[in-house]
Length: 633
Image (tube, rainbow, N blue to C red; front, side, top):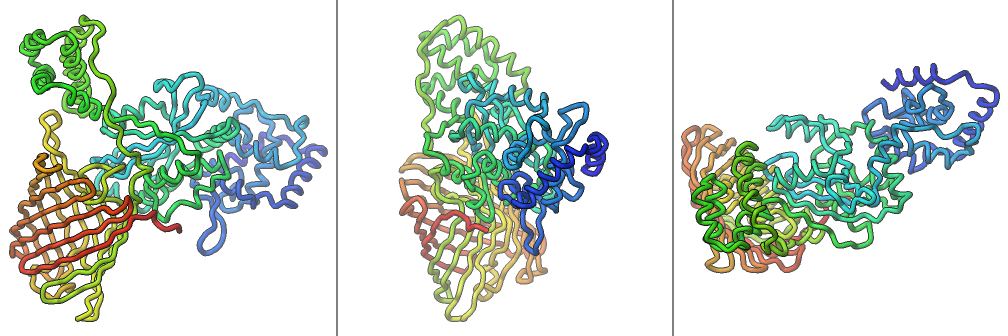
């Protein structure tokens, strides 16, 4: 496509007159003298990067982003082609390079002695209409909390909101600039593999804000955090000019590096080059880290929190009496006659509160795909009519309690040191590392409550008696979602775990029984408040293991996992047990468990005590853990 456009450009441009040729040579000579193609800003505009083994190449893979056929790997040739683009004289200005790449040419005209009388600005009606439709008065960075039921959004998502001038934050009028993988409807293992190797193209898009609310706030029960960005009018214009150009790019989308969290920050650098945000990005990037980096680069401002639809419904539920809550369920489940009879016994303000809560709850059930749109209309329309007849009533004031924003949560990477004592093997010194981001004993503020989301966690040990190193555990992924049973929601709890572990139950010397293990479980959880807070759970588990330490080198089976999570201020404790029987391969059953207590000394520092058993093996340990931002590349 780049070659065809280049040919089209040559055909559309007239033969250079003597005056044009002289002007072109002057501009080229100025560029050569100042080596403008080496300008850091120019390289940012075209996303040029130095290769590890030398040379330069743009990350963008779409040929339409360049004017020169060799522009992706040759910044000088591309710059010269951009100069030629000034002389475009086709019949439609919208097809000109200057209209296709308005920020490039705005910068180029400022850096070169362009005679505006001889080369006037093009009439870019398509771009100007798009820009006028957006017309942002201000810009915000939005962070959508993680959603464990979708692999592509486990860690959350970041995007920009453009607040339309004069709209006073109206959701229906604002737009977003969003960067995401073009993965279609694909899910599962292939989805994860392609995301790891960059097989999906990453694309920018301009999407109405209300659609993002529909997706995150309603469909996926995700909170939205909005961080105002103080951009001047000139910086906002620059953001829009480059945003128009980004409609012509494709970047390889990598889940842990070149993702939405990474790509949005270089875009902000175009609007405000002094930020240099890309230099602050770690080796791997998750949305919470990029939100912290971006928010810290601007003057402090109070973030705006938009609770999910379910949080709003749940808050309203807390304002009702037990009888009123029961009445909401009666009405929501379609028992209209019974419900309206009981409703009539309440005073008008309480009737209104019940009806409003029921309507919101039914909307949530529809978005959660528990009822159809037809069922929603059939059940909620009569209730809304009853509510309208009651007129203005004093129902709810205030709203859900605002949690801590992600910017005040612990950092994403965790390291640790500790001392363990192993039955029959003596002491062992341990080093821990986890790339991201939390387990159920880490401080939950700012992250998903009662959840684990761990990637690439490693525990290495040195045993002095045996004078050797070995790994205790090497987790590739661990995801756990504990959902206290709620008759309004009826969510199950579940867990997925994959990696390497030591099968100490085989009786071998510590550290010599490594197996590859994968297990998954589903079950129920229940919350109590006997002390501060307790969360009991039981999961039916399927388990498999592969390794030479096992009889026949493998096993497949299942069993039961039970546990209780305790919370009391800065102290969190977890007790778990598993019993697994195996029907295939090594049929030796496994009985194991752990008891762990974590005391949070500060936001980014904790101490843990752990006792565990696996078959006849026993061990205990104490560990100091520290959270930090991942290192820079």
